[in-house]
Amino acid sequence: MQRRTFIKQTSILTALASTQTLASNNPSTQFPMVISTWKNEKANEAAWASLQKTGRALDAVEAGARIPEADPNDTSVGYGGFPDRDGNVTLDACIMDEKGNAGSVTFLQHIMHPISVARAVMEKTPHVMLSGEGALQFALSQGFKKENLLTDVAKKAWEEWKKTSKYEPKINIERHDTIGLLALGTKGEISGACTTSGLAFKMHGRVGDSPVIGAAVFCDDEVGGACATGLGEFVLKTLGSFLIVELMRNGKTPQQACEEAIMRIVKRYNYKEFQIGYLALNKKGEYGAYSIQSGFSYTITENGVTKVIESKYYMK
Ligand code: GLY
Image (cartoon, rainbow, N blue to C red; front, side, top):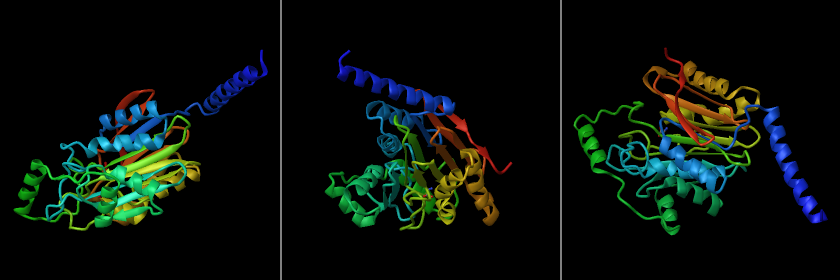
């Protein structure tokens, strides 16, 4: 055997052996993998398709987030999202990769894919977060198209809401399904993303947790990642995703870490009126989920198979 061929074959065998060792040391080691908040099969399938193409978790979470962003029937994300109390659709999103890079946009209007703008902020600017008019100008400079995101259905719902204009800073889980996604790429690296139109009929200018790194999403490639959905104010006040990753770093399982993060809210706030759901995924591919109320579900894709799972919850 020629020396070059021998070296090539040996390194392929070594690579295979180390993958197998990893798998046998951790029977649960499982990647690639995608997990997302709520019932989001199409988003997961897009993320999975992206993983088959590039293998990169970052591409996968972006591809997944773009599905509800473009769906006019999803009334809490992107196009079709319910507007604020003045009739403006304002969007928040963030993305984080395995190297600790992060990008986000807040209070962005007229752009269908805030997650891709957030990624551009991460990759093409020295900043982490762009907001409002500045975020829009940046998006346009990057070739994103300005569009009307207020659908007839959302406009009608807003007009109906205006009859009472009852300001309810609550989450109705049927109405508010911010999507958060976590993925492990083919190299086992972690990334996360989150995108939303925020709380329906919120005050003009209100920004929730979804664009805030550490609140809605946090990833650390030594540990894993976490993401959030629900009433953003309480995720912000407790920095839930960062907390969950730190709890996992200190030995908690993803399930235990999500439960602890929910308990931090339950102990301090009047939790009965709103919903928060957390998802966590560690580097072994172990995952967990927990919410305050019943009704929170999440979608997982592994080995190309997608399933929706009901989360455990606190309020019985
Ligand atoms: N979790 C999304 C929001 O509160 O806006």
